[in-house]
Length: 144
Image (spheres, one colour):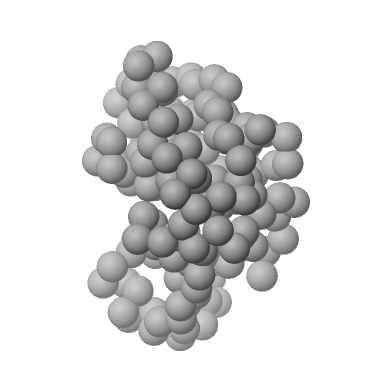
């Protein structure tokens, strides 16, 4: 299992990804860097976000945090996962069974990282900056 320095931050990444999918109809981040103090996610996107959109994203993530959603896992065949999820970021040599991380009924995706037991453990979520260049929207965020 990949070791993330902070399971709270990694679980927050899942919430942010799902908020982006729900609000903008885009795909999950194609690249991310998760650290204890601040993290970032990169999305293929046509523009930067407005201040109102950033506020809306923060609100949606924080509502999922406050809902204290249970974080669990399930194991499914790679074929079954391919029907439901984009498997483009899977490392080579992945076995026939994939671990799916479920965040209540809010999010589900293949993942090898560590997570909190419930979203209530995350604390507050805040986007500290965004930038856009050459079709890539970068969101930087922190907790607390």
